[in-house]
Image 1: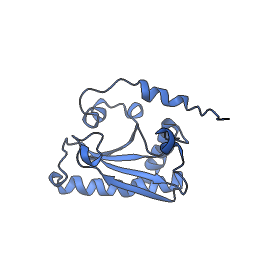
Image 2 (image 1 turned 30 degrees about the vertical axis):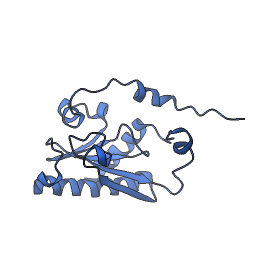
Image 3 (image 1 turned 60 degrees about the vertical axis):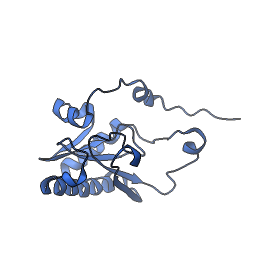
Length: 162
């Protein structure tokens, strides 16, 4: 007999209205960091939780400047993106104790970019055995922590780290 798996907190993502415009430009401009799960603001880039994460703690590092051309990043933007990525890994190791990380940038929709007009680096914590049968048989991911909980823990650790 099959069992039910309830992840009722995911309904808010399913029912959320689609955002008009660029979320990576609009969210930091609104100054509602807790609403948009912004972890940290730098001079050229910011760190934010992914609203549709692959795993708990899935972060993105994003330049404020709207561009999808990686080679157009200034040295300051590229350096801060790199430095913030390093801090993100340090914080995620402390808070979530992953076994490893996937980190990368998808340039263009064909490469898998969900928001292909504004480049962003993904930092995804990984644990041994974190992939199970759910994505294979039902195209469903099971996340072990609500984004609000992850955001609070990661934000506090980031603030302590800098």
